[in-house]
Length: 366
Image 1: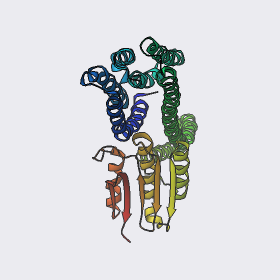
Image 2 (image 1 turned 30 degrees about the vertical axis):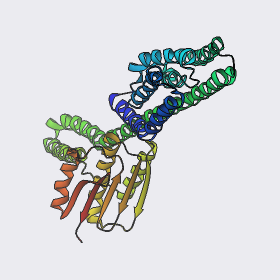
Image 3 (image 1 turned 180 degrees about the vertical axis):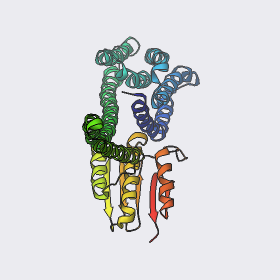
């Protein structure tokens, strides 16, 4: 996966994790306070129980930043120490919460032995809870073993499922980026085909005429001169067509461009909606097709779009996509070239950010 695809994938995961931070961190903090408050019989118990709760909150905050690995070990060790102290010293049946929380965030992200580590965590919680028998055998099995083990196992299962969800999101982002790259490659192949159509036949004819002129240069100089004039005309016409193709000025069929844009976006996994209110006149149709083609390429290359809306009217075209990033409009050289041509033909080409959407609009006066 290239750097751009990795950037998009990390951006998507970052948004999901920031959403978790905003929605889940307050309940996590509240749960930590409740766990400590419920088992706090005397003031010094706080010195035993609070570190485990803090470790859980810190690990969760770092998890939302996709950086839990940096704090996983110290937080896990703190939680692992608090649980036996809570069992043997404080008599807290809820002191397992810290080690279970940290483990549920860190273990599913291990590259190896993640499931074995999950089983080991559940076993550790149960074994430490059973140590309560050494202090007080009454009601130990349910409060210090069954409930902690059962809840820890459930948390681990949910964590494995949640981490798999993030893996799927990453795979989908990578697939979408690959499809976008394929779409751009298809556009380049089409350009190469157009270039071949322009130059291939002409060069073949030029070769034949040059060979004929070489044979006639002494036998029939006038005929040879005529062949050379035709070669000059053919080469000049080819240069003109090649220049038009390079600057996107070759005659385009707007209907074909709409269908091509639709196919490219769908191939890239982008939802597209085309609204055709009216058909523009022939004078502006070609230029609108060029605007659509250039904008399509820009969206595929530069935007993280999930949806594109194309609206065609009698006076112009508007292409909006929801892949805008940042607060400024990027400099797009291809559209800058087209803007000058649109202005010369009495129209206006604008590129703007509107309500989180990147909007390209070309409008001509009637």
